[in-house]
Length: 384
Image (cartoon, rainbow, N blue to C red; front, side, top):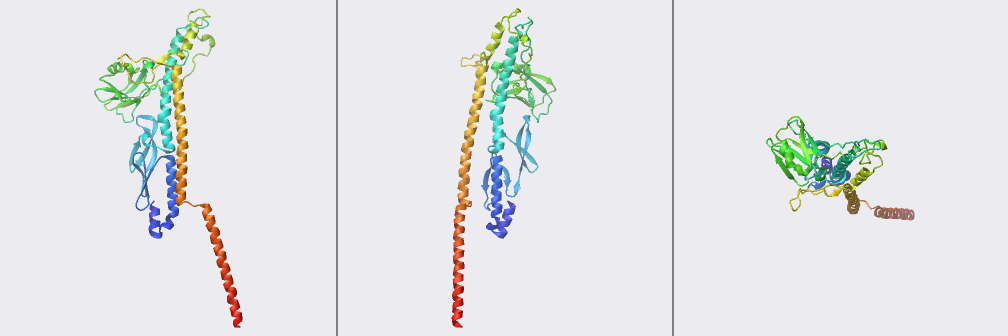
C-alpha cells in the first residue's frame, strides 16, 4: 500500500497500475482464506477488516492472524489477531467466509454436535446392553460379563485462565435425560453454577452435593477428584463428546455371549432382550425442557435407532445445504469477476481488432510515405 502511494505521487497513476493489480490479487487471495471487508481510502489505498470490524490491513500496516488455544477448551483452536503487542482471540462466529470460516463453521455446526450425539448413543448402548448381558447366562452356564468395552466420559475441562487447581469428574446418571447441549460449570467464591449453553438455563447451589441434587433432571452429577477451586474458575462440560471413540467389543468368544435367561443352554430369551435394545426408548428427544406441560418429569422418548437416523438425516441436510451454498457463491463470484473484467480487464477480442486496425493504419501510412517519396523523386528528375 505504501509503495503504491509513493509511485503515484512521483510517477502518476499509470505507473502504479501494476502494483494496484497486484494489490487487488492479494486481497482476493486473502478473501479465499477468510472473509474480509474492503474499505477504499480517499488516496485509493485499501483497508481490510475481518470479523466485526477488526483491522487486518490499514494503509501500510498489516496485523497477523494466528491460531491460539481456546481458553475454554485448550484442545480446540481459535483465530487470533495480533495488534501491536496485543493478541486478540476472535470468537469462531466472527470468522465468516473463506476456507478458515468454513472449517470453523464445520467444527461448530457439525463436528462437535455429531461427536456429542454419537457419544450419547454409544454410552447409552454400552450401559444398557452390558446391564442386560450381565443378567443372562452364556453357553457354558456362566453369568454374562461386559459385552462392550466401557464408554469413557470426558471430564470437565478447566479454563486456561483458572487460578485454582481443582479437577472434577462427571458421571451420567440417566442417559435418557441428557439434553443435546454443552455445559459450563463455574464458581464465584460462594456458589457453584451450571449453565446449559444451548439455552442458558442455569442451576446454582452453595456446594457440589446440593448442585447435584438440583441438576438431577439433567442426567448428570459432578465429583471433585483433586485440588481446590478458586473464585472465578470455570469448566467446559462435554461428557459424551468422545464416548464413541473407544466403542469396541469386550467379548471375543461366541460361547461367552449370554443369550439365555436361565443357566440352561438353549434359552434365547436374553438374546431377544438384547436385540430389543435397538428400538427401546432410552433417549430424550433432544428437548431442553425438564418438565412437560403438566409438570411431570421428562421421560425418555427416543430409541437408539431413531436417534441415529435423525443424526444421519441432520448431517445429510447440512452437507446438502453446504453444497448448494458453494454452487450459489461460485455463481456470484463468477458474475462479480466478469463484471470487474468488463470494467477494468482486458478484452482479448477487442484488443485483437484494435491491433489489426493499427496494423492497417501503419501499412497505409507506410504506403503513403512510399508514394510521397516516389513523387518527390519524379519532381526532382523533371527539374534536371
